[in-house]
Image 1 (tube, rainbow, N blue to C red):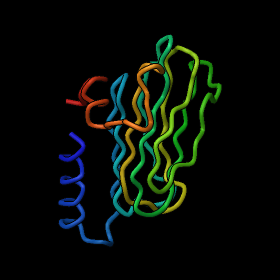
Image 2: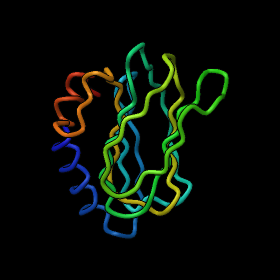
Image 3: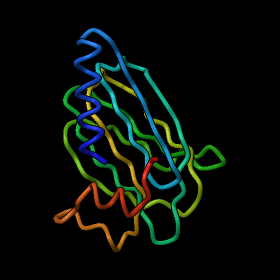
Image 4: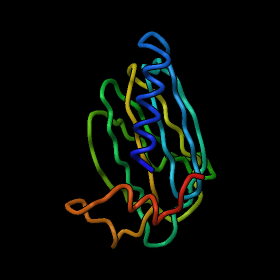
Length: 142
């Protein structure tokens, strides 16, 4: 899935050239994928995700340039997570169980991708993490 996304992003870059700006977000309750190609500052998209008991939010980033902010708000509007994401990174964040509005915002013109997924805290092992398998286990975006 991630390989297909990377190939699609590369093809999109070749078709659009360097001057165009693209920003897309696909979201399910367990997996959100964000893709940016020269995305302009303040480009934003949102979706919804659900965190269960004993689960955490995992953010895997592959940002070639720029920066994006990922924000989780609960149903009352309280911000439970607001994280600036850049470069290549893999982090987990414990959040209370519940439904969240998830927003991705470009804070500095960006190109790259971010995958946000919900998974059991006990299953997250950063040393042996396989993004493709984790996305498959969480449920596909199709």
